[in-house]
Image (cartoon, rainbow over all chains, first blue to last red; front, side, top):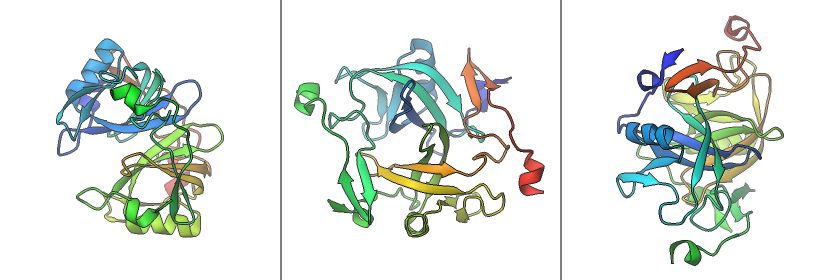
Length: 126
Length: 126
């Protein structure tokens, strides 16, 4: 066994990409970024905390929308530079009100919306 | 509908992260990177092609190991800056001979191996 803190490989900006996957259905919900503090807080609290690159601060997923992610299992890849978070997503993962952020389906060089809006974003952030 | 080429948001290095997920079981296999050429080739051929950041060249997954990925479906996220590839993985995704690259399970601040080696890496790259 290896110490997690020593194993984690962050990029030049101190970040590591984290995939969130619904633990029971296997649906991939989103890809976001974590810094060391976000990884540590997520483990300590069991609630997923990312690093928001646009807001440049810790982003406790659901802090505004109520759409939390409970951490079920954390995995690290072979190069120690990507995380897989098996989570239990409360409500919807996407700020558009869709269950997953991966709602754009690519077909014949074009992008089309392939997932329904489950919650009006105005309700989430209104 | 939107044109894919126009929609794709690459980072400062011209790359976009791509999650590979086994299309039927839902297992997340790996996270790698694509440039525009890799995205286009993957769509054109139906075989997944990444950009190798370490080798700084196109990386036709399986070109050495024979462990190809057939593209089943491509998805793009809400911000257009992450791809989800639903694939049919031939054999194993990981260069260590494991089915998935996410074989490190994080537990109590430590990392332990949680997936078996299915193919001896010496066979894949020998």
